[in-house]
Length: 342
Image 1 (cartoon, rainbow, N blue to C red):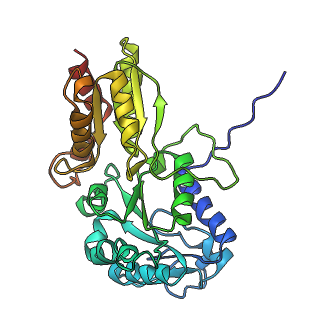
Image 2: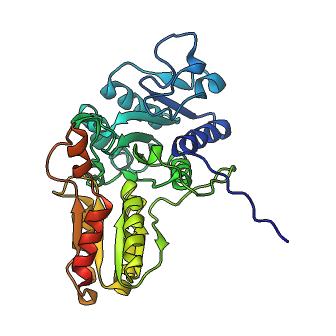
């Protein structure tokens, strides 16, 4: 009897950490910089430091040293700007922007410099910059540390935006981002970091293509589109809908810019109904963009209007019970899906 190969399970945090470690081993131009990623300042115990607020860089200082794993002052404008300059000069920096809500203090460096330099220099200068940043509510971190603002960055040409949904895609997309010659923002949802996934994460380096999506569940009655954490929400909702006799397709978007538009349209042409689940605010959201895409390019296939599920147009509550109601959940998705199925 042939034994099945054991699944190599990593946590989301371990997957990101492994991607960073492997790319730093393969390319000496890869450096990491950010606040507290190596323990802060000149502490002698840096190798045992926490590795940033999400522990994504833990242990890297011990292997690669302070020259390549750089603690920075508490100035996002300063170290993101330095990362842009380092990328323009030939390095491949990975900058840890702790929480996406902090983008406001370094927006000029990202949207006015990183996004435009390659174009404005006639293609003669590449910006191989990776920015990883934390998104997502549900961890009781209050309004300034819980937003999911990826839609803002998708608005700017020159930026690539990816949202992993499990440890496998976390490692693959992080590796692809570091190797890419354009600025890539990797949005890491913090709720996913605390979930155990039964997915195989290969030990060798691999990439997940930026711009791709994937079908996690085949179905014919309705398409559920998930982004990061909401992909898990869609899978949970699909399981409940399937138990009621409905055939549900779940599309994991993975990349927001570029976006796999044809993958979305192909699924909608098959199921003729779509529910998009997006944790970002509703106005000018990715869900709105996808809804417009489907209405404009697949209108004749639709048996029901596209449905969007977003968080409320309100700051994330600090109250635990209110926060639980704020984040899109399985029941919301099931209700919306039943609305288009009836």
